[in-house]
Image (cartoon, rainbow, N blue to C red; front, side, top):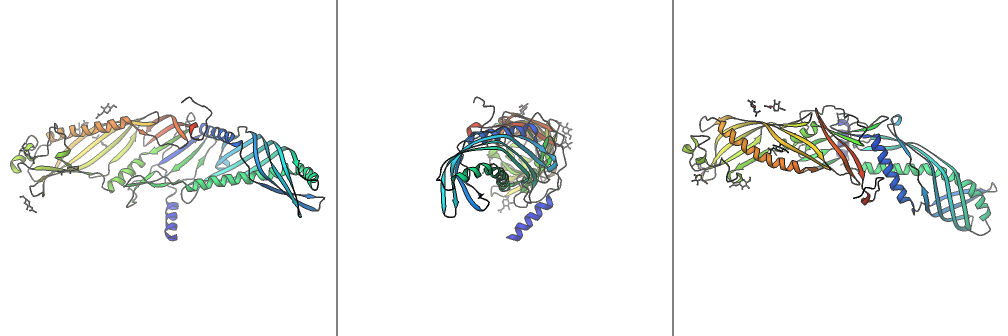
Length: 483
Ligand SMILES: *[C@@H]1O[C@H](CO)[C@@H](O)[C@H](O)[C@H]1NC(C)=O
Ligand SMILES: *[C@@H]1O[C@H](CO)[C@@H](O)[C@H](O)[C@H]1NC(C)=O
Ligand SMILES: *[C@@H]1O[C@H](CO)[C@@H](O)[C@H](O)[C@H]1NC(C)=O
Ligand SMILES: *[C@@H]1O[C@H](CO)[C@@H](O)[C@H](O)[C@H]1NC(C)=O
Ligand SMILES: *[C@@H]1O[C@H](CO)[C@@H](O)[C@H](O)[C@H]1NC(C)=O
Ligand SMILES: *[C@@H]1O[C@H](CO)[C@@H](O)[C@H](O)[C@H]1NC(C)=O
């Protein structure tokens, strides 16, 4: 068990360094929006929050250590100024500074000195909290994004405390010492909390699934293959973006080429996808035998000019009705090469090489091979975005049928090619219809994509988009749009 885990980790670490086939680029606009939405959310959720218990001690008369605990500390009011967040190439991460935060708190205090206990309530106002945190982004062995705290610095300008209750024993000392000491105690306490928060975030990132099954034939690997790249204006994450045959997990005989997603600061983020990703899926499907189908007469629509009955094949293969009269036929269609997709400026091309084997079905159900054709066909499609959907249209560029073998003697394929082309066009019209309806862009959970644009470049496609945090799902956004 441990060995297999180690082997997988080794495998993943070996594969890293390959060109990523998917790149996610976050711009400064995206960073600022994310920060704004996050600040807004924190602000809305801060009031009424109960802070963890806080313990400390002070020294009375330079001799006696008196412990104190603040419990049930609630935030009564908090004016959260918008922090500043920037890409920080120095540490391959972000730098966030919060300055001038003020918080009003209330809660209960208690002190203990030997066996003497004392307690009461307090109101506290903390002024001028400044926090600067620098985090570093990286990758872990499993290909997840990792985040670690590089530095944290906290300052508190002033704390006002109003203390009530308590007996006369330690109370006066407590108040005096507490007032002078609590500012420093809070200052010291902030960064461990920031680090704990970053640690929690890291645990969430570690738990994200980056390798999953797509359907019965394919799985998708979205592990990071390169270290995050941070510049002053963007963050670039390179994901593997490769589909695999679930059973064989075989690597395709081609590699992911490198590509550069153009930085467009007008959009919050861009996702670039290489045609390698599509081709790895085609390879996975091909090796899983998905591109193989049987066509019989019952799937051919009644009005269609061709029927899979040897007696009706005269217009296409004159000798067939005489040689095998009155038999139904089966066509076995399969890809003979891995279909290849290529992204070209403003269009997506697909080329298909296949074989069609024709059989006559004897009354005793044995199949008698008749002939074999080779099919070469090229398709083009256009893709675009409409709202939250990616839509497209497809058309056939070229379709040729050639006879490669025959048990019924030679025949011209022109008439068959013509009718087959009509058949493919009919299927394509259905595909066109489905593409026209579009597929929903993958959701982001708490956010939806807005103003998305899809651009096809040589070798890759880029989705440029803004995102909008959904107010009705627990988050809030600054542009409270009317629904
Ligand atoms: C014809 O093909 C369809 C779909 O492949 C299949 O469901 C059906 O049973 C076949 N009919 C005959 C008579 O073989
Ligand atoms: C094939 O077509 C011929 C001529 O129309 C017809 O007589 C025959 O019944 C058909 N065969 C089958 C199996 O449908
Ligand atoms: C079909 O597509 C392939 C690959 O894109 C290309 O090399 C070939 O020239 C195309 N053929 C025709 C007839 O368009
Ligand atoms: C089925 O029928 C064909 C043609 O009549 C014949 O050649 C073949 O031997 C038969 N097969 C079996 C298993 O009976
Ligand atoms: C398809 O390709 C063949 C040669 O590969 C060419 O002669 C024919 O004109 C092409 N047809 C179309 C519709 O492009
Ligand atoms: C597919 O739809 C586009 C427009 O969306 C149209 O131009 C094209 O002719 C259609 N192709 C087929 C095969 O229906």
